[in-house]
Length: 252
Length: 247
Image 1 (cartoon, rainbow over the protein chains, first blue to last red):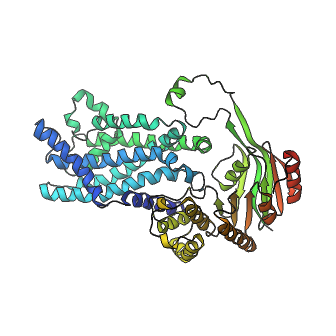
Image 2 (image 1 turned 180 degrees about the horizontal axis):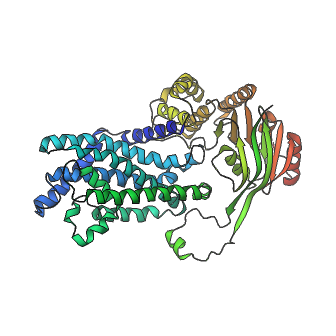
Image 3 (image 1 turned 30 degrees about the horizontal axis):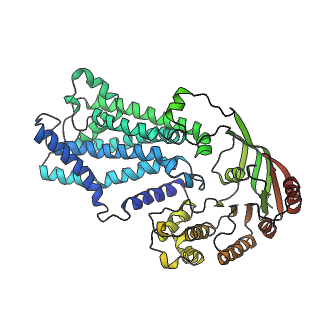
């Protein structure tokens, strides 16, 4: 059996566990981001009354960001803990170790893809217009996958060696959620800080998810930044993981 | 006869003050440790070859590196020195219940564990009834494994791993599991597998098990291979050092 076979089994297993014993099963994949989007829509447009935040329709704008963030957040959290959570299997089954990280990202990625119907439905409901730049989404998915793999390959070994990596991570992820243009757009950031936000690879990735719906002012700049940074993170992750794998196996 | 396991000058070291959980504070501040620093070699300069169809027993007192060596052969630990080359797949009877996922049913777990050990879906289907029958879990196929007793879990794990049909079987003490009746079944299955020409590598304290199955003995002492010979040679050396003749 190839590595791909093992990966497929592990991803399938993660999804099975996710839905085992739930009544609504797959619907949770749709309800989760919808509920998040609804609450931000309520707070920002109805309570605070910010009319100029993001783009219109705001609920669609929110969803494009929240869906990809949900994938990011879930993958970083799960892949960082993957070697610890699966320690018994890591200690007894000889498959390439990086698969434990990739499967976490793949499982969350599958849920992300399974949630796409909401985007389509909301696009129809709000009668938003879509142009050909929607195909940026494909590149966004590939890039986000590489970025997540790099991050996971760095964090999973660190979590084995220092368990409180996951505590730190929880705080960092919460901060990053607000520092990433998810509930607002790049153009809402004061101009002198915009360049800083490009150093966050998720900025460019979310811009690509949105490109088919709204004209993103500096799309190409954002894409270049996030491509370079994501690839760099991936290369660092692969190198680091190779180097530390031996040590980690002794501690798992 | 072809060589299926070749261990070449293998060494592995561990940190002496091996604490399971570091905290970030310690990593950053590099606090002084009271325990002795440095590394120790759990195994060093280990050399041996195992031919196809051999039944090898690995013995040694606790903490002499038996399980570590087994894990290196199973490919779940990477040695710091030397190489361990394995021809063909291994069926590792290590942490038998570790592969089972408690939220999934017995049926799903069979497909999961057998699949991860390399069986395709059709191959699992073919063996499915055998696995279930051997593990005696036929009435609980669609029950989540978390409701299983520890005995049922270990029977299921044993049954799956011994069904995957790999040429090399690695066993960490768990040659026979469960109650007396099930243990008997395990022995019979092991004999069957040996008769099919499979290679057995068994880590055990139990003289009875070693004598029952193995013809060759390896004796590990303080991280090096003290004896590589017939089973009785290895057992004699082991007993002489421990001063105990058990079983």
